Image (cartoon, rainbow, N blue to C red; front, side, top):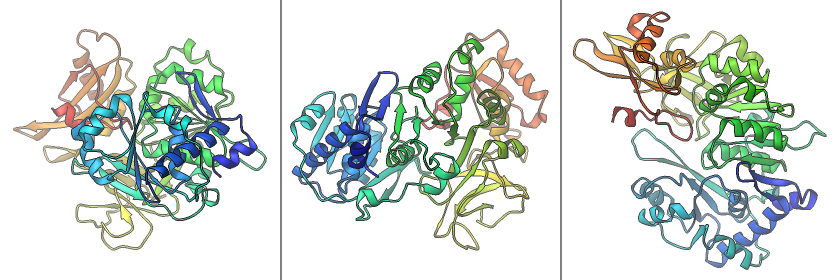
Length: 483
């Protein structure tokens, strides 16, 4: 399904809502405005397979921009609007955009990165251009997308989905198996979902969920920035049925006073999905105790090599797991790409084909470390290159981070290794305190760890910092901490 069909069947249903600004756009408006924008691109020479660079935060215009591309065979390439020119340059080089749509605050950086061609600036000429363009009947074919992951070399890694030549109305439901597992697809006779997705729409998961919910004719509710209480209010106000989170959002909502958490009616909320970064087991358990058994989890790579998922009851029986593979396989391998015994930690690979040693065609890895149990459940333990080797023994930072995450004085935490003349590395923790830190907090946190973990795993020192640098997907940016 696509805007023209939804505009005919539910013209006044909201397609996209920005909860904190109150802006929204109906399916009738998305149909009209996306058709006009597609015409605007066509009149400037863009044709099937050309790239439109989209440099915009969560904005009410997101739906019409991506659907203008998807209905006209163009490839939309969304990127973080807060990046500087030097950070954007490799993305611009790889995308080679034929046109750019950018927020006004990002224009200077995008031009500085070398982007050329027609520009539309949201906050300046964008709305006037769309309103002034009379939609034309163009040949419609489903477009593609060009996304960028962080990669392992420091240069963003592009992965492109090309147009397939299929009409948008005939495209199968995106990630149909996963969306069915996660209960996003409504049962026969049920209304389409209302999804709350406060994360940045330019990331692969929010964009995929937006696409699926829009194919179903539902409503996507987003926010220009994440606010813990504002998220609860949005669920209540808009009758949200489904939601998409990263674990740091859970932590911030759990920090709200009980009176605030209980203030909002969440009775419409049936499914909460999280992914992108590991969730401390105690955080997830606390969310299930609060929201009930509605918390689902997925794990996979943006490149689509494979995935796992796990429902709430299954997770309670296997706490800490990210599930078992769905439609593929998981393999845990050593540094030579050979499978390790069940229970041993190694690099996590996802794939769908037979292979004796990895990497191999059809297999991919996001650089995570993990193990599987004898039932095939996957548990993540850390990131490749972030294992701390102290005195010849491996220490996995996630175990310590999970322990500290729900300490009442801790707002956020990162654990990493630093050089040590005697042991090779020592464990160090950086903690962003919740509020004004009490005297002796750093020493108290070290003692907290030593009372619960083997001493070699515990941080020798805790540094109190203003904030833990994280990507918009919730992943810790260790390079900034190590400085």
